[in-house]
Image (cartoon, rainbow, N blue to C red; front, side, top):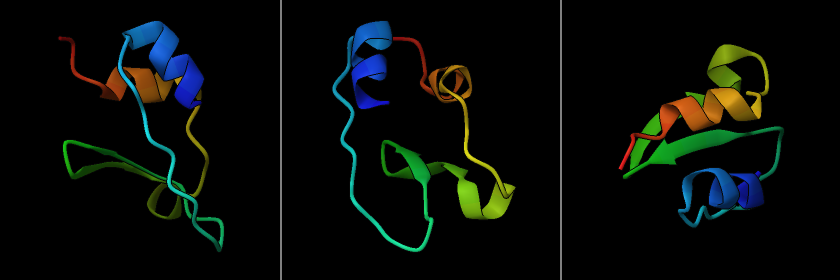
Amino acid sequence: MAAEIQRERGIAATLVKSSGGVFEVTIDGKLAFSKKAEGRFPDLEEVLALIPAT
């Protein structure tokens, strides 16, 4: 997903390894999406929509 974010938005995303099925998206240090809270994995379009336009 990091490569797609780079290609679509021109910003470098950092993937941080975790365990236990955790997947969170943070933007500028703020939680924007939590797989644990939502009960599902986000699709790319949903993650892209969370990234503010520059």
